[in-house]
Length: 161
Image (cartoon, rainbow, N blue to C red; front, side, top):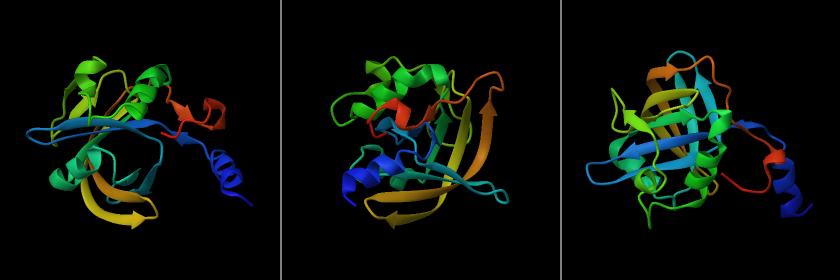
């Protein structure tokens, strides 16, 4: 079996689409993620998978915290933009006019219009293949029950978030 067949098969796994938002005193970024999972109820832990070459990776390592905004189905354009543009060359918040508000307990921003914004503090990280798994405790959440989540599946095309 070749790598292309394996990639196509893995795209059959349905994932929620979110933005991981992190900032230091001088830098900020929002990057699209679809490799997200709950890990534990007590304490409330989640996992996000981030490639080390992503601009946001060292921001998370430096601060040990981030916001995970679970995007709503009408935010697919935002997901695509944040997943294909890089903060190495632009400020995504200014360039894409991202609607946001300050997080309460961590450095970062809530994304307006998202299904949920989870404020997270990293508890552990693990290298898994070509990505880092950040396991984080959810400290605070705001959500909108009226919104439906954006879901990534093989029907979305071949873009890897």
